[in-house]
Image (cartoon, rainbow, N blue to C red; front, side, top):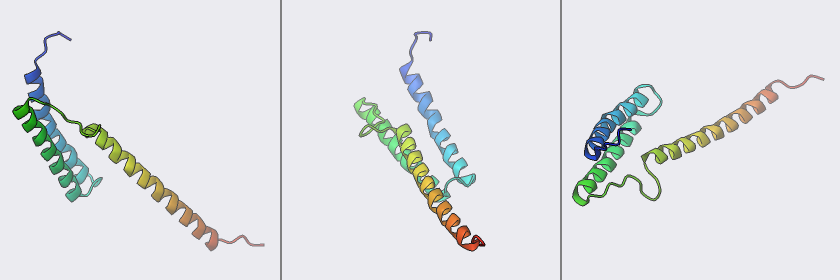
Length: 111
């Protein structure tokens, strides 16, 4: 906007806020009952390990790379959401078919 870039400042502030923000995100998912607490903490730990690797490589090699095999953290969340939606859609179909069959058998048509 001002055409005055400050790459080190932006890098630092962005990642300094990403780390606690991600911790708050997974704490909220766990405390809100949307994710098993152990799984939320394990996901947070893997995120922090990945970020540590990115930060170490950036410092040691001068290479900042957050995507691997074409996937970055945001795309991985998308993949997780797709897998979750597919699982819930399958559960919905299986449950609704089973319940419809059970109700059909419990309430036969009288002739």
